[in-house]
Amino acid sequence: MLTVEELNENVSNKDRLDVFRTNMENCLKDAGRDSIEEYELMFIPILHAKHFYVMCFNMKSAKVEVLDNLGGDEEFDSKQPPIMQHTLSDYLAEIQHPIAETLRSSKRTRLKMGWRTLNNIVDCGMFAMRHMETYKGKQLKN
Image (cartoon, rainbow, N blue to C red; front, top):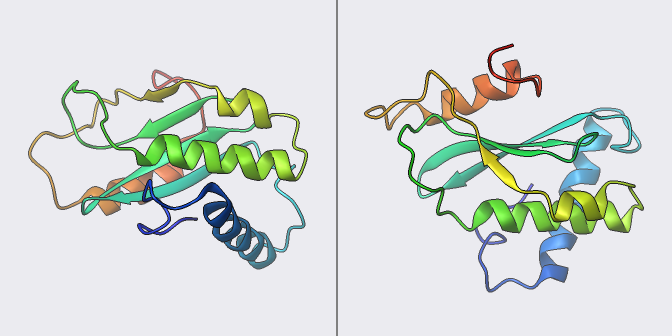
């Protein structure tokens, strides 16, 4: 939805939203949809420092979850998740989606999945695709 350039902190919110809107409209058109209103989960893959991970936005409960194969309990230090979250919230506010402001202030959670890895730094793209295919927004034990 946004390139590495748009995820830079120096890009204005307006310019970032313009790119996001255009990309969202193209995605919706390609899917044969007019709006995102009917979607319950929105998956946005992120590329940061040659590492892919996925942000999952629950459009019903306003949960924001980061799906990442890298193990360890360190804090997620990328600035991309808050930028993406705020840009999506700006877009939702623009189209008057009822969850816009709730989603803007939602806390991001980095899920602790049993298959996270410590030494696999080359398969993150495959993990990201698999997360988008299989994650249904339920607790991991389910």
